[in-house]
Image (cartoon, rainbow, N blue to C red; front, side):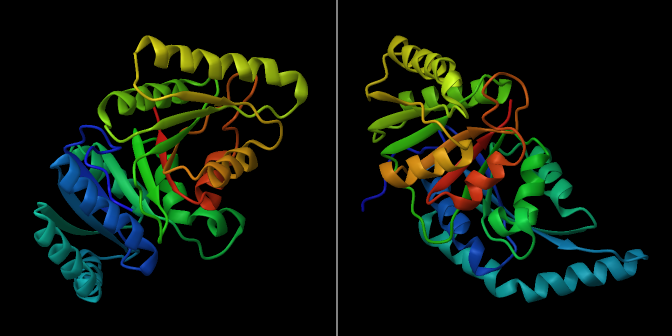
Length: 283
């Protein structure tokens, strides 16, 4: 399928790609290079070596060793960027808390989005999304895009999952902005899951208000509402499967409000189970 010419990341100018060098990072690598080309953005390629060394010399040795081990992967990214006309900067650092370092580097370099792959190794939460990805999202960076290994974003349909939290309201504004700037976006589906039938009217009111905002903004594509009843994560993932969406937009964890769509680990569950990319937005 032909890729779109206008980016689903809007007017992003600096992208930070956090990669561990594994095959699970390939989806994020491909999207980072493509978005770098589509947005004419610089891509910061960051690899954080986990170090627990007691001395500076031992820590520096660990970083050098990690850089050598990852050299073929980093050279591959450089070649992809060169072929696509994308400016990249490769950064390899050591840290005892990689998730904090990733966010610190993103803020230091004024990145608009952090891009990460999706995989897990062990444990209930990490099995779904990967420990490092979950920890980075928990840091509250404004936008984190998680890309599955074998999925390509084509830019025609986004699923916006909403509740009444501050983060969700920011996700709504991001979706409306994409509706104005992404020329190939054909449809926005707005979903609010109600855990019980008596919560469905409130969920319906929320999605209708979002579509009313879309009409006031005179977006050129239709805005469709969904208010399923059931487990929020399952509802979001099932809708993404059935509708074949390109990307899910979802707010970071929110604990306020009646519906509480993103309470607990719902966001992480959505990322781990979704068939498409997920953009996590935090106000």
